[in-house]
Image (cartoon, rainbow, N blue to C red; front, side, top):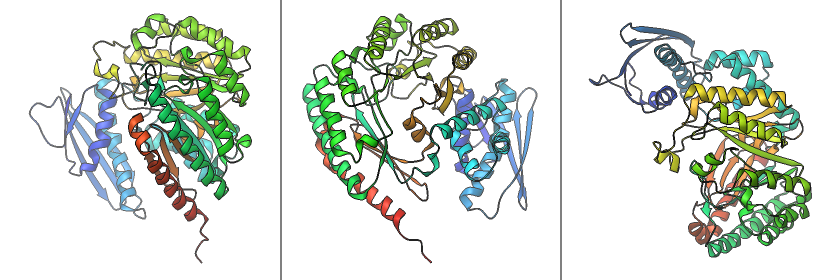
Amino acid sequence: MHISITGLSDQRFERPLQLIANLFFEESHIYFNKIDNADISIEISLEQIETEVTVTGILDSNVPLRAEHRAVIDLELSEKEQFKQLKNAVSHVYLMLLQELTGMTQKWGILTGVRPTKLLHRKLREGADPETAQKELAKEHMITPEKAALMQRIVDRQLAAVPDLYSLKKEVSIYIGIPFCPTKCAYCTFPAYAINGRQGSVNSFLGGLHFEMKQMGSWLKEKGIKITTVYFGGGTPTSITAEEMDMLYEEMYTSFPDATEIREVTVEAGRPDTITPEKLEVLKKWNINRISINPQSYIQETLKAIGRHHTVEETVDKFKLAREMGMDNINMDLIIGLPGEGTKEFTYTLNETEKLMPESLTVHTLSFKRASEMTKNKDKYRVADRGEVEKMMELAETWTKEHGYEPYYLYRQKNILGNLENVGYSFPGQESIYNIIIMEEMQTIIGLGCGASSKFVHPVTGVITHFANPKDPKSYNDNFEHYTNEKIKILEDLFSEANEPASI
């Protein structure tokens, strides 16, 4: 799909308009000039009188389509913020034209970002009441009332689960990445290496990880900085042996400051084929009771197609084993839109989930991630159309509500089916604090291990700095000391600035 846009000379419009085009068309490319082979031609004009700008758009078709939007530009803002207001006005017109042309309504409006609930949190912190905040978001971003209400439910749940959410910036959370899995799933782009035959790599990696934990723990103790949550992700953290897990959690309790006071420790045991009684005993020994056991689907043919080599029966058996051994806060992940699945198959998966009733349930909408096997071979992996995917999401919303689950976090991804979202549901009081913190970017999260990303949130300004460890074990093993020292330097700057006395 080639889209010709005339009337805009500023190249800063290109990316936001391209992202909006991607919501409507699987393959699209926009051009800021008139081209002969354009499938869609749009002319946009801007007229600004003092602070008011009028954006007009005309889409050339059999019956020309026209849209107009007026906005007020705050001249007291920085040039960057003024352009952002202008960009939103242009995006309004562009979205209206494409919606009218295609007959498709984008429920998230012009929003293409990952974390829409951050916008609502910001308005509430600025003093807006919930009803006003919802109305403002709907007007500013063309969000439907349905999605605005969902955002409000999630924010309410987050603040009930973590009442001090807005004051956690002086603490940190820790993400520990274990980059090994039994096999790699077709939709996955996480650092995940098949563990069979790689024991040498595992041993070297774990040596580096223990070093990072010691050094980071020592620095946090020295500075008196508390840890709110710890999250073991990957890969699959339960891919390593029970003995290796035991030593890793011992390191956590030895090295991290006030480890017994950490609010929440989560270990992803997402692949049921990695769970054993011995590993569950290790988790119990270290008082870790929040784990994930992820079916993704209860259709055996689907599991085979996406490269998960466990059976449906194994998922159920390992869940029951975890329950019998005292795991009382279990999350399960389901994915909407997996190859070959529609409402019939997803209804079956929900019915099977009802037999287990985990404390929390994350419902993902399939996303075609650029580097995944599934994206590289789309012809091989046929997925449901937009309408079918929306029906599956509605099934999930109805089912969770009927069974007492509340939505508590939400995020979106590029190339997500139906332009929908991923939603975490839980029973009240069983929310993952880590998931709330990482989605709302309220706190620094230090990433340790192969492929682990750190997100440094300035305790005063909220400015975010990103830093990532290498994704492959060899590069990590060769350089873990360097990456540990680099992270500590960033933390030194971050927390020293935060503790400087205000100038008079």
